[in-house]
Image 1 (cartoon, one colour):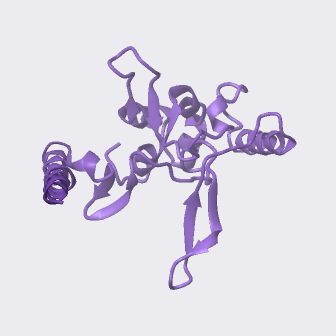
Image 2 (spheres, rainbow, N blue to C red):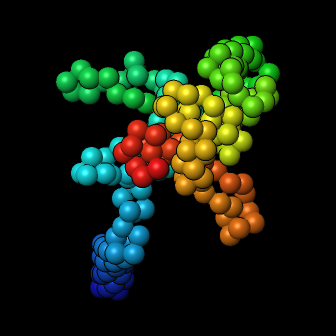
Amino acid sequence: MKKEKSVFSRALIIFLVMMVLCGLIYTLVMTGVCQLLFGKKANGSIIEVDGVKYGSELLAQKYTDESHMWGRIMNLDVSTFTDDNGNRLMYAEPSNKTPASEEYAEEIQKRVEMIKKANPDADTEKIPVELVTCSGSGLDPHISVAAAEYQVPRLARENNMTEEEVRDIIEKYTKGKFLGILGEETVNVLEVNLALDGILEG
């Protein structure tokens, strides 16, 4: 009986020690290190200007007006959920539509027609694929350089800018390949739009 109590006591002590070490001390140390070395990233890569938070570099925002750059199709739901005051909450979800479905084909066709109508002066009739498809998460904040270039004439026209000025903004907020060799160059849509609005430096 005493032996069983001794084993139980040691097990309990080990459990409590590991809980404090792994659940408290480790968490506090890692949080402190991340805040110290990677503060912005640890807090969600929020874009904040003059005390105003405009969003995260890592999450897309939906733009459909012609004066802003458009990103990928987003799966947004603003009618299902509300907060305690009855205000509608925005909910996003991954896309699970199969490319073989009629619903998917109809959605793509509507998107193609909308993009062509908004970009009659595009340098090419071929629409970059990410402008008419959804990412796996439905919240991809980036598009390719080609997709950004496709929208340059419209953005220049709607913002009373030259195409060169728009391209300078796009270049400023273009992220290169990982380690210079992996992946593709991508453009952050939110950052470009904030620059077009004069919120971020163009």
